[in-house]
Image (cartoon, rainbow, N blue to C red; front, side, top):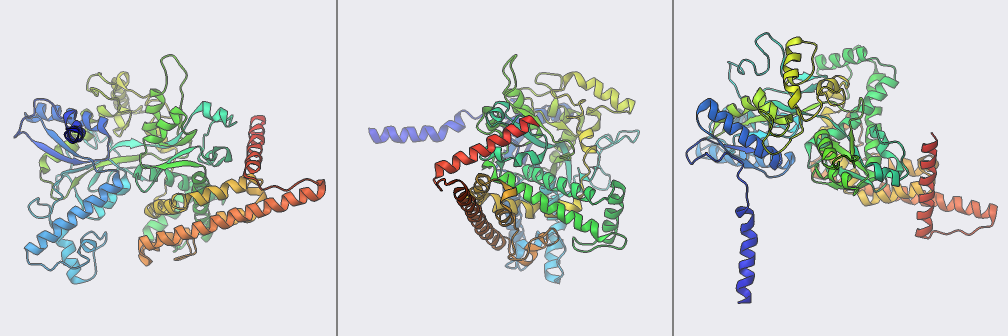
Amino acid sequence: MKQFVILLAAALIVALPFIFRRETDVSDWRAGDPELVVVTPHNEAFRQEFARGFSQWHQSKFGSPVRIDWRVIGGTTEIMRYLASEYAASAKQFFKAQAVAWPADGAEVILSRKKPEAPEAQALWQTFRRSDDPVQITSRMDLFFGGGVYDHEKAEKQGLTVPAWGDAGPPAGLFEDAAGRVLIPREMNGEVWRGQAYYGSVLSAFGICYNGDRLADLGIARPPSSWEDLTDPRYFGQLGLTDPTKSGSVAKAFEMIVQTECAKAVAAAGFTPGQIRTFEAAFAAAGKGAGEIPPGVPEAYQEAIGRGWLEGVRLLRRIGANARYFTDSSGRVPMDVSTGAAAAGIAIDFFGRLQAEMSTPPGGRPAMAYVTPVGGSSVTADPVSLLRGAPHRELAVRFIEYLLGEEGQRLWNYRVGTPGGPLRFALRRLPIRRDFYPSADPVLQAAFEKRRPYLTDPLWRPEVDAYRLGQSFLYEPRWTGAHFGIQRDLIRAMCMDSGDELKRAWQAIMEHGGPEKNPEAMRLLEALPDRPVPLTWASAITVYAKVPRLDALREWTAFFREQYRRAEAAANARGRTSARQTVLRGGGRVSDEPQERAVRLAGTLALQGKKEGAD
């Protein structure tokens, strides 16, 4: 009997998710009606609202509701790996059925971003890219919806996705209106929002969320307003951060930190925005790599970018040294900050604003605030892409048109229950269409005013208006774009896989007077790997071409662990020397007890807090 009860309980546990599962499609869908298969990193709120909205839109236009079969397998990194494996397996099966030899490196060949040189490999590569038939090569899914531009652009270059429209192009009124007004730009200040096979559907910026009460506890009188503020030693063990190898959006936030430092270094070297545009145009025209300089561009300009990149990496390391944790979920950070589990953290704008509102009691003071650093973040897009060999291609294209049209865009920022708005969840995202924001153009302004009463967020305010934010930050892709993937891995090796050693070294430096009084320890702490190749701005983008990625990661992690241990030892040695000198002068006692070290650290931080308050 006891065994039966245990088995029954186990069966109930397994069945509960299915018993209480909420269907995300409209109730009048029946077997035989259209069905769309979408892989996405978006959460349940997004999935419910867009499933309902698209189904109703499709029924009104085409006479039948639609059920969306959502495939949720993790973040964009996991999605990309899954898609690559699915297409490789499907291609292998297809080629073998055609009696075409499949080489051992077949997956690498067909997914190569560049056309291979060997004739046999080139034939495989071209055949894969000519196929867009679900009975030939397919992932058995229709759309890739959500995630950042980096992964969607990579999917396009790997041949995983295809253009949604043929030679006729997109339907009228989607990207431009009848008078030629741009409704969805191709790019904004260097950030590309749509390519040949991916289309930005919603916008994001990045910033800092913080808990005012926790800052007061730490003696921090001035809330963080720049990325550099998060390196303050009083944040030690208090920052919530997200693993950039799991979240493409957060990886973009980390890129913003490095890009900002590059811009500072270039400006400090005396180069004007006009000169930057001229130089970058020369690089683009010449097609030069990171280490090559075209005629007319001073070497000092290239050197300034390299210095800025190094400073950005140093900044990332100090922020990582203050981390309480690195989570797999970007939504966790603002939630923890709102409850005080973390004092501050790096957040995607919509998560920050949403949590700030949710954590504010009726008539009370907000527990958490969110700020986008002025001039510290570009505005980037979350795209949607049509997958190669989509089983329901026509339906998938209709979803893209719905998503980019007025009806789909309303869901991103309309209040719950408003006409055309979401039914249950306020999504709090920034629509991509220009006619949802204030404009000097009277037609666009009239469209904005019509929507203004229904908006959840004040899209008319400068700190929220995506188009104003985008214009305040000039993104130079050559500075950091090619480093995007490498940088994700570098942060993991530098701040996560060697995180314990980093924190101990940083704590020892703080205990013994801080960075200025520990130059040798800081030199050791901030060194970049000299293996498998010396790592610089110019060399970083070619590392994986010379060394397998996992081998490089192992080398980097071992290097950082060794350096941090040496930095900790150097700081402690300096502390002992300083203590002995104090003893000789004053006849005191030398002690290395952990409790006394903690007291010294607390005293140092308290003095710094008082100094900031006085400032």
